[in-house]
Image (cartoon, rainbow, N blue to C red):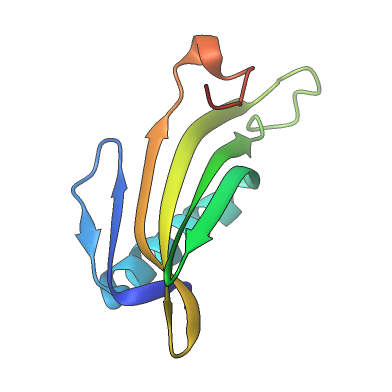
Amino acid sequence: SYYTEQAQLMADGMRPIQGHAAITEFWQAAITRAAAAGAQRTIRRHESHCSGDLGYALCTVTVHIPAAGDAPDAAGTTIASWDATIWRRGPDGWRIEVDISTRLPPATRAQHRPG
């Protein structure tokens, strides 16, 4: 429900996905996999602005996947990405028109702050 009917979703390692139905299918599968792994997702907004009926948000998205098994000292895996969304205001409110993310290189993951 956050995306427009013609929205586009783009990320590393996958072909762009276009359209509300295809994006819904993508997120349902991703959420199912994340829940099965016990993953936790955190979004940190760094900047957002709007002008007229368009706006954008720049965020860091961090996903932590706990280690498998009962090893108390295992740290698990953390994946961090930059995310840029372009929002469009329509008759039913603000919706995402374009959602683009790219993984952060390991050396910059601790920073989580745009230049």
